[in-house]
Image 1 (cartoon, rainbow, N blue to C red):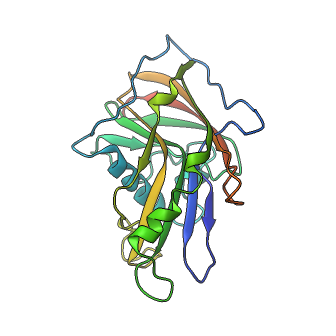
Image 2: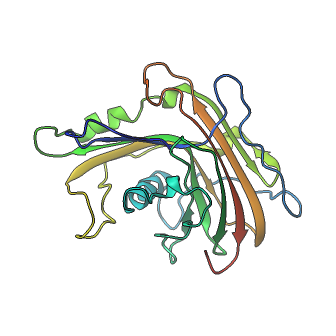
Length: 246
């Protein structure tokens, strides 16, 4: 996931996260099965634990914003921080993309019975609710539509089987949310803020016990945004499903 801080005085963030095939025709990571037959799964489009997918993406962003600078999940190169900050009792396990500056190959153990939420590529924006640089919720939401109408490619390979593009969903947070709700009083930022997100996601039902390989690639092809208009990412996970998580 690419991350951009707006003018420092504004305290704004514009972020993406995902994976990649580039507009010039490169092929995204093509994962191969590591053991056993390909896993037949159908990505979900309905609520999990009584919570709609779009709301889960807001929770995913709160999860990423709860980490100190430099330790965010999308900066993890090898998966060693995969379990940090996860809700062990919740029904969904979060996986991250990258900041766009490297291709990641990660290893991660996921507890049995967890749904898996992972971004393909997306936009995030937050701004203060009050003060000189205040934004309304509608202004913030308008920022995150940038680039998502310019999706060039989105490829997901699970256990050697390419999932249909329809398996991914474009999800937009229906209303603004507090991006720092998971940060305690000792943490950095300060609010209140409006935040919104828009992008392409994959929400998988619980995977069978054992080893799985998940490879993701996506890219934008827009020219309006010089920072992220041609965002490209590639990342791959070797997943071990079973307790405990590491």
